[in-house]
Length: 170
Image 1: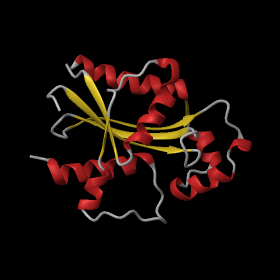
Image 2: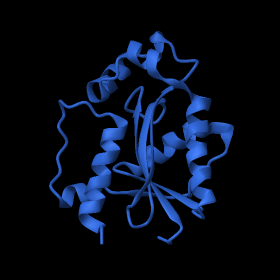
Image 3: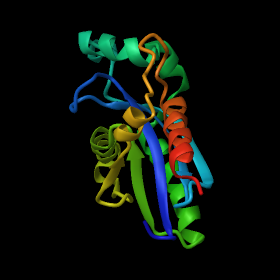
């Protein structure tokens, strides 16, 4: 990593458990290369063309993990373009502070990277072409997930952040 890199330690919750599903929540922490927190992001994301019929049996499997109720999601989510505007505003503020490369960090980096590309679509993609997967850290630290607990994006991202600090903070 370079001193002007920003890590976006993040997690998505989605409508299902496959790559063709849609991100409905994104949470994350922007940090510098020494894991100093620079900013935060936590939004439920509304996809205009999703309706109750689209929350099918696969969604029920995803719901078991994130426990985001459909009505709660409808009431509290922001439109996709607004979520992107909020995220872009945070990225631009960091660019003004001379940070210029943004790297996705997650416990399932390929999943997060692909959903970030889906979220952005034609809006332009501000993240570096690679992502950092920290699953090995979870294994090395004997961290096991509680299958009954709700997996919300921001709290999961914070868990990754604290694991990184424990293992790498100088």
